[in-house]
Every structure is written in structure tokens, then in C-alpha cells.
Length: 229
Image 1 (cartoon, rainbow, N blue to C red):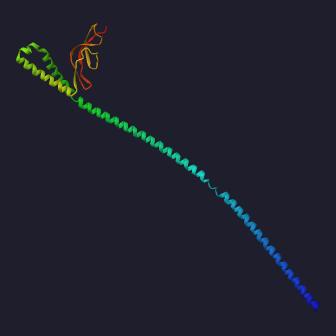
Image 2 (image 1 turned 45 degrees about the vertical axis):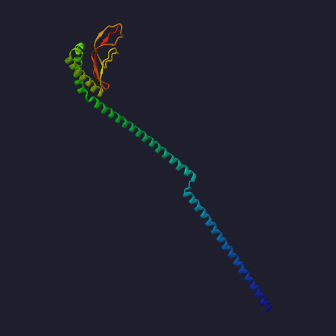
Image 3 (image 1 turned 180 degrees about the vertical axis):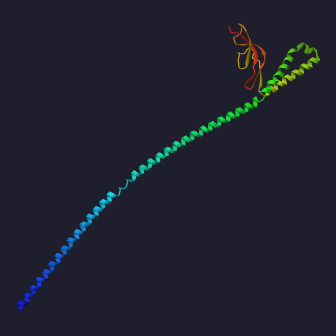
């Protein structure tokens, strides 16, 4: 009986040892499987990360992006400054053209007002010439000796003087270029006379006085000129 109990105890101990060994092997197997799964997962994650790193483009440096934006803005500013300069140049040219147009219009208006009486003034010049000849043809001694002739002379003289005042009021000026240098714009040479005492080209005689309206000659003075030596 003791032997039997001892054998049962030994068998039970062997059975318990076998169970513990089986448990340790199972745990080791489970740990191995878990390690392999973890390694596979890590490799897959690494491969996925590599794939993502390859597929996903790398983000740009913020400083590089800011430099590109600054360069673009600088180019836009330069273009706008150039456009402003061109617009300013066109504006100044337009102002100058407008000012020139106004000046020309003002000058043309003034000239039209001044020279609109040119034809009428030319006709009045004949009246002035007649009055002037009438005054020159009366001897001064007879004016003083004859009251009637003196009154007539005085009336003609007043008429002539008043007419000259009207001429001056409208910028119609009489010119008598005696001893002046001959000017073909205002003078008309009727003859030439040699005169060693005067410089050639000098007006030495005035046959008929001339008239100027503003700066325009409406009747040149008819003159005699000293001949060239």
C-alpha cells in the first residue's frame, strides 16, 4: 500500500511537471507569435511610411515661400509704378496740348477782333489821305489872313486829328519812316537816289505814309531809298 501511494504520488508529480512544461512551451510559442506579428506590423508601418513619404511631396520652407511672394509683389509694384509714370506723362502732355490750344484760340480770337476791321480801315485811309492833302495844300499865310479859310482849315484839321485818334484807339498806327533803314515789310521802294552823305538803304524821302494795324502792315509806306554805292 505504501508503495502504491508512493507510485501515485510520483505519477502525480510527473503529471504536474508535464503540465508546467506544456504551459511554458505554450507561453513561449505565444510570445514568439506575438513578436513576429509585432515585427511584421512594424515592417509594414515602415514600408507604409516610406510609401507615404515617397507619394506625399515635402512641404516647402516658409521662408522660401515668403521670398517668392515678396519677389512677386515687388514685380507687381514695379509694373504699377511704370504704369503710373506713363499715365502721368500722358496727363502732362494732355495738359500742355490743352494749354497750347487755349493760347492759340485766345490769340486767334484777339487777332480776329483786331483784324476784322482791316478792310474798313483800308477804306478810311483814303479819307485820311484826302484830309492830309487838303491841309498840306493850304498856305499858312492865307489861313491867317482869311477868317473863312482859317475856319475851314481849322475844321478840316480837327476832323483829321479826330480820325487819327480813332485810328490809334483801334491800334491803327501811321508810319513816316524818314531817315530810317529800309524794311520791305513796312516800306515800298518807289525809286533809288545816290546820296554819299547817307548810308545805302536809308529812306531819304516819303511819298505816302504807311499804316500798321497792330503788327501787320496794311499799307506799306511808299518811299525813296538811298542807292548802293
